[in-house]
Length: 345
Image 1 (spheres, rainbow, N blue to C red):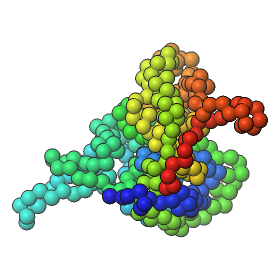
Image 2: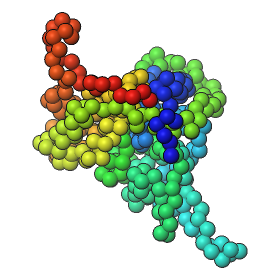
Image 3: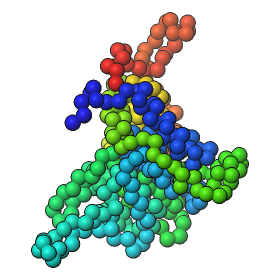
Image 4: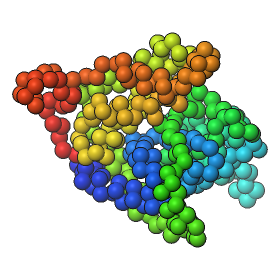
């Protein structure tokens, strides 16, 4: 068990994350915000869903993140004929031992890349449910623990693409955040032609962090302080999705927990030992939107889940730490923050 004194300091976290960030950005050109979100999810012990059209670097981003960390990596190409046992593993009869022997599947790795996850059937997709939530796999009544750290980075094409199955609500809810890579700018695409025109930069990518470092950084993020007003703000944002008239399915309590964990990781990446409402606001769309189901009328009006989340952010009051006459000489409200700084990480 890791004690408080064993956790990495914020300086260690910043130095390690900067190495990983630089390594990934050397492969993914012009997308620093996407790389930052991927690192936030990693340190928050979550799973990342990368959704976009083919050819924009979804799999490249997943591979670059995995290769930048010295840990076990397995890639699963999801296809319509993929079986659940291909993911979780299977028990095979051993003639010599006269007993069944368990053969682990591809899920038994620290970083699992699920490429085009929505090309497999819902039956196969459901094989990930237990491992993503409980970090374990149960086969024939026997439970097997998964390694730590454990992260699933899945890519998918939009559901309107041919040969795809929409992810079930329970599956989407287990992904902490969804990100779209998007098309690069003209300058980034020109640079990509120089970098990727010959040999793929993935071939020369070397690990810049070890798995045990990531485990310590995760422990450091757990120790980030979140004041009660900030926690209440996150709860109010999620609760607003359940009562919004344009949504037939709001966010779950798991979404609240994921939003809080992601905010703590974002604060740690910024070098702070406490989370602010700004951290919650910046991550709300990425953490909540993919869990929401718009009503039929909202879809007819071309209202997206992201637009609803932005509207909720505008309507929900931001917590403050009260009025201070000396703040800036204007006597205005200041953002909520810990009244007493927490103990150093």
